Amino acid sequence: MSDSNKTPAYNLKVVIQETGLKADTLRALVRRYGLPNPQRTAGGHRLYSQYDIEMIRWLMSRQEEGLRINHAIELWRKFEQAGRDTFQEMPIQAESPQAAVSVVIAGKMLEENK
Image 1 (tube, rainbow, N blue to C red):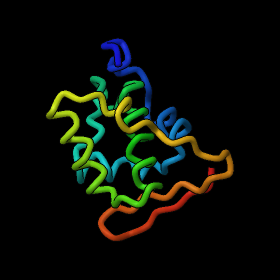
Image 2 (image 1 turned 135 degrees about the horizontal axis):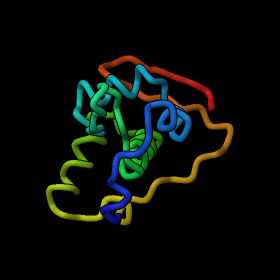
Image 3 (image 1 turned 120 degrees about the vertical axis):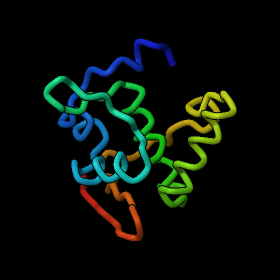
Image 4 (image 1 turned 90 degrees about the vertical axis):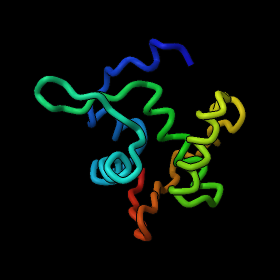
């Protein structure tokens, strides 16, 4: 992915619209696992990149395959540390437009229909 895709440009609302996650779920991912790692504006607002959005989609895709979020994040970090292209080696699975989004964090399941 190009460096321009890592430029922080999107606020929380855009990320929520693009991924289907609830704001609280996204904040919990950042707080508990440090992924994604949004930059902050001078006013303290989070800014995410296209890379961050794709990372979230990738993590959600791994969960749809049956991985727990902590294992998906461990896998992401292993790929990253090895310098491997995570998106190419394990592509994001296509999801149906009616799919329910659920992310499990610390034993709780948080769901929201798209």
